[in-house]
Image 1 (tube, rainbow, N blue to C red):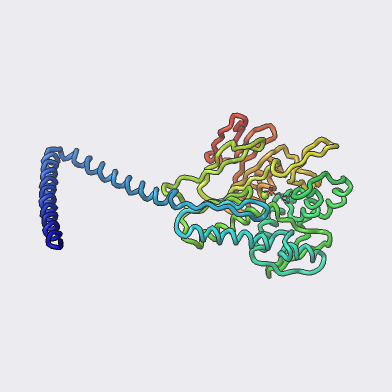
Image 2 (cartoon, helix red, strand yellow):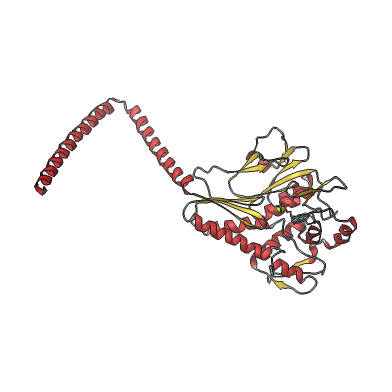
Length: 387
Ligand code: ADP
Ligand code: MG
């Protein structure tokens, strides 16, 4: 048997050799004909042919890189923090670990800035109102600084000392129309001037009856925290959404923008697409948390006007704000909702931000910087103008 196997092997090798030789001849022969053909082509056409082949090679290389960067390496995960879904889509190396780290950072941030969380910075600050200064985590301090700058610039339309009022309306667990006398009683307590932030990282609330609620800035700040994790990681690009705030990271291969759908304020689905290449987009809408009171027959929403103590009625149903900073985009979207279209413009300019406004009568207004970055695809709305 071994001898037989040896013979068989030799015969097979010999066969292979002949086949290889024949094939080689064929190839050389083919090349020969190709060379002849090539010789017959004029110099000008040769240049074009070479250029075409080169272009094809480049396209093929780019295409394979694009595919390698694309869906095969995508990781999507949804977690829950700050009373919202945290949705991440990541591409590139170590995407699962990075997503996990980012989700943990959002949970840690919630433990610092939620007034509901036992012993959080904000709960301690609220508990010490009218008493002591307390020291803050640098992350809390930064969010408070950003928030205060929007409180000041919006002249109190955005006010993080809204807590006594937001806790009275209780939009999160048992929304109801409070007695007007109670609202009037709490109104004087809503004043961001009560918050003192010192450079040494300590803060205090001057009046005992005041308290902070960072509900209008927390989700955008969470997007900042997630992007900080992405920057320290190996991933190539990603997008994160925390509730109504979205942050994008990294570039697509050909520099195409990220596409973010804008929710229909009057129904399910989306009414258009934002195309952004960097930064953050936050949307505040009167449709988010609502209830209808049986006696008045009116519907109330959760974005409050600190001047009146009632839901803001500036004629808008939704405002989306783009900014290079997540916390800013979130704070500004709430501020602009309270201020209305016209009064928002100087505020947006001051922070180098852009916005899209939807009015109660389905008209859409955009600031100039977003003009080419939004595509409306619903016949129920009208692009009414650039501001
Ligand atoms: P969402 O929380 O749905 O993303 P916003 O970012 O607009 O919407 O924040 C609304 C939340 O912010 C409210 O639930 C409340 O906690 C708080 N808030 C309401 N009105 C104001 C206001 N004028 N200024 C600051 N915070 C506010
Ligand atoms: Mg907001």
